[in-house]
Image (cartoon, rainbow, N blue to C red; front, side, top):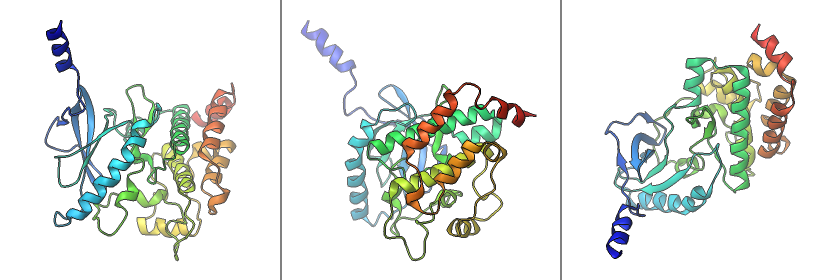
Length: 299
């Protein structure tokens, strides 16, 4: 009997189970990370290997490792179908720590939209799921700080899942270099890029502005201010210039009003994530509310 228990203990995954790469070449990269497919505790995972600081700065490595480890218990405690699960902080993949998260083989929602041109009804469901996920983050005291279409993925059941929450603040300083992926500034709230800087930053309101811009991305398949350079887009945001709205938002008063509310210049005028989630959920649940609009859109 004792031998049987010992054998069973060996089969059980331990807290020290290694994280392994599935292949040596990364399949994606971000501003401060290279992203690999890997394995952990018998399941396929994403390994986000952080980079961007010189190996001659060991104090920076210690600082970022300490910050990520401090956030880990909160991240692991998140439990929502529209929020990516974080499993652990792993060492040994580079100078900086790596984040081990759920893996989504369908990829980012934006690539899926551009490839498949899904129905308006499907896009409404995705926007509602993103709002639900964001509401759960805020209720848990977590702020995304980099919400945009590139950080929303699709799970195996085609549901929208918000990823990469809470990471950006750890890397938004001059000690880190960036790969400079496009689009990051286009969902940035005006108070973040204000000159002089706004001293009363409210992270939940920054997320709401970004949610509004993410709505635009989901319905248009393109980033906000798609016809402008990143620099021109920054000026447009600072001047509160409304980006071109896709037909799906422009021709539905509820969605148009929600977008307008979320992207108000004054942070205090923006709704909460909970309000946005409840509104979208109600719109989806009321029979026939979208039907005449959907029929007119599809003509």
